[in-house]
Amino acid sequence: MEDILLPLFPLEVVLLPEEVLPLHIFEDRYKEMIGECLAAQSSGRGQSEFGIVLAKGQEICHIGCAAQISRITRRYADGRMDILTVGQRRFEILFTDGEKSYLRAGVEFFEDEPNASPPPERDIRRTLELFEQVISRLGAQRESSLPPDMDPQLSFRMAALLPLGLELKQKLLTLRNEAERLKELSHALEEIIPRLDRAARDHEKAGGNGDLRQQR
Image (cartoon, rainbow, N blue to C red; front, side, top):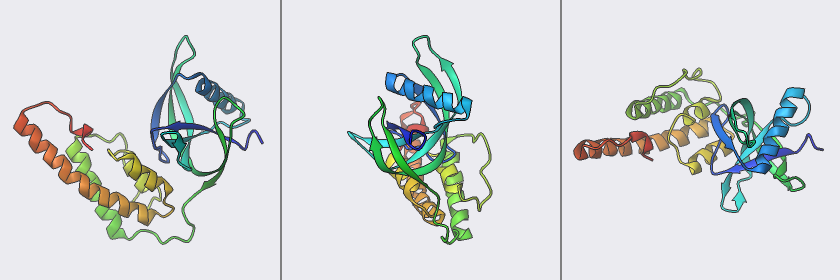
């Protein structure tokens, strides 16, 4: 039973599959949780993943994404640590367990609908074009190339590099159809581009030194 329960880390964050997320661990309960995940990772026994779920006040969303610790970037004398995590499998919470200092849950991991039709090529191309336009306006440099057009994780890989709101990222995480995710992402990008353009014009008029990447 212990191995079945997934440790939960509620945050005001939405983690997507394959997304890299740095975390600073400072609360005692989460130092305990991460320590146990690291021990399981080292021994090959037990639960090495933990689930990141979006926290809204005192409530948490029932759909989240498991995170794997890729490395510890810094340890502090008081037990705090900085870690780098990578999004893995999506899950739905079935029930929660409060026996430990941190919350755990029985979850069901899920993938996309097996019989879902692949997204039309025109939708893929359109979303990629909009993505490139936003990246260009942000002046961002991608660290790595995107996967092939038909990669089922393409929408997640693009979304992880964009300044998207939590509500949209949570919706993308929940959708079990790549075609639907690409449509949602495309609509969001169509709205972001004019906002970035307005911000750039305002910046030029003001002669300030703001950072476009902070615009939402």
